[in-house]
Length: 283
Ligand SMILES: Cc1cc2nc3c(=O)[nH]c(=O)nc-3n(C[C@H](O)[C@H](O)[C@H](O)COP(=O)(O)OP(=O)(O)OC[C@H]3O[C@@H](n4cnc5c(N)ncnc54)[C@H](O)[C@@H]3O)c2cc1C
Image (tube, rainbow, N blue to C red; front, side):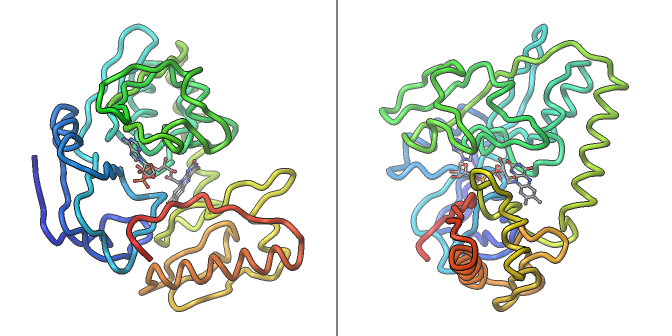
């Protein structure tokens, strides 16, 4: 297993901010990840940090990143992926195997582990729609397999958030499809992302969950907050649901702007926004 001390996390986090981890564990496969977990008191496991802001003060103790824990297999209509496989990689693998249903994963810049934890979704699809079962490291240190129905999925929610289960592997049940149609859908979804999202800047994606009956971006825009700034953090002009790192933003900038947006939206519309992004380390 690769171990880095005093490891800078800003270059690994998709918002490009934050301090260093005292000890960064980079397991190379599922076995090494389970060994790492057995040696961690506080089992902090992350993927591509695409939904996570890292504290400017860094992270004390150990954290593990799963980015090298990869490898997919196909049996019939079922794909088994490791926690560090990317969601775009899953969509591409499904395409190669003429399997439809995972197209919505294409362009979500995270891992399978982060995707299952968040029940990630886009353009009408969610992980819960295709996940068959999950192999997990349980809070009591056992390796267990849970079926979809036992994983507590709801909008951007899963059992993994409530209890400290760590995803090791996941199986996805897809349907036979035509490569041309699958590829066309993936291309279309990526074009829609490029058109609507500020992909040219670092960000954590949508900062807030979709409030019932509303769209966070529309509420933020309606409150005149497009372009609002704190330090280098800016409410995207292209998509008000995103806060971008417009240059040199710290995590503190991003959190201060998030708080300002929440406060203003609450005052002006009465809607309470809830963060989708997660925070790693003490802020
Ligand atoms: C430009 C952009 C666009 C985005 N678009 C979308 C979108 O369309 N839809 C969407 O849902 N999200 C979107 N996101 C957010 C993000 O990509 C997803 O939430 C993704 O699933 C996070 O994966 P990750 O590996 O980066 O997770 P991380 O940020 O590394 O971790 C997120 C959470 O998952 C937990 N976690 C990670 N791996 C594991 C594991 N193996 N076991 C248990 N817990 C784990 C972490 O502890 C953490 O709490 C976007 C982000 C960006 C930057």
